[in-house]
Length: 349
Image (cartoon, rainbow, N blue to C red; front, side, top):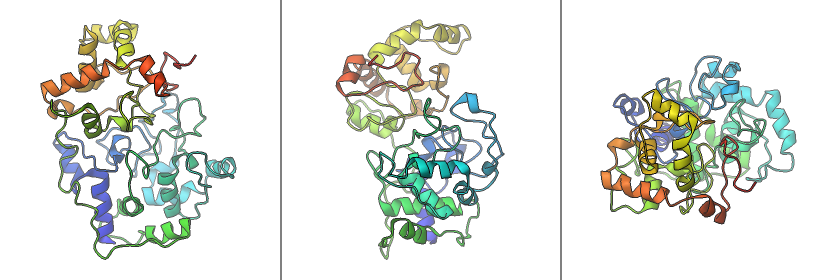
């Protein structure tokens, strides 16, 4: 069990010392990409439910209208919290809503234990959405989280089990008595999970410093975007893996960059000395290097902020040029649309 927990930590953070990486101002992000949205330690930002024992109110909710809604379960560890979730009235409502199967996954929610709930939440994020974290306009019925066993994350069953093993033991390092995930997985799916005699789940990113070196001029646009993990939050025309992001704005900079530069919100940021771009390309570059300079209305300040240390100048310019070629027409051709959060509204109205 110790090896499984260690593997889960690497899959989540890409390192066995995530707090050490954080202390150096870097982002500990592994294959699972969980820290892009979830807060595992107090010093992180969050665009999804916090995954540590915190206060009874989550102060970093994506939907600011719900920022003061208390959630007593947050004071418990993730393992303890998982047992509380399945007893909530909201979970029972979700059971009825998806009694014929949740549309995206086909899964009928049926978790009977905390471990089964954690497993269910990874394979079927819409089966239960924590209060305040659903997509705008869905009454917390639709989660922005992708199914991580599908593209582009594509975790295997064993990797998902390892992630849950880490979550079950996170608050009690060295104590694996509450790591029940193997039994939970087999009970939930009613099938046997084959565990190899030697786990080989940590070879991809062991001892990494977070995301690999990115943004070199020689990299193709899709390769840069994959390394930067933009696709986890954004939909981007012209990029095969970036079709499902539900957290950040649709990246159609041929349309949006000029409009945002001229917006009252951006001009206010300029007057406050936070934003400085004067051309669409400068705006795109600024949004990558200093994403906190201007936050698109309707969204949170949660984007990774260390890309400036990981991109070459030419690599950054090439990425900006690519994004500036993507507009409303390109998005429509691929069936992409803005999120409800975006004040510009749907491309199809």
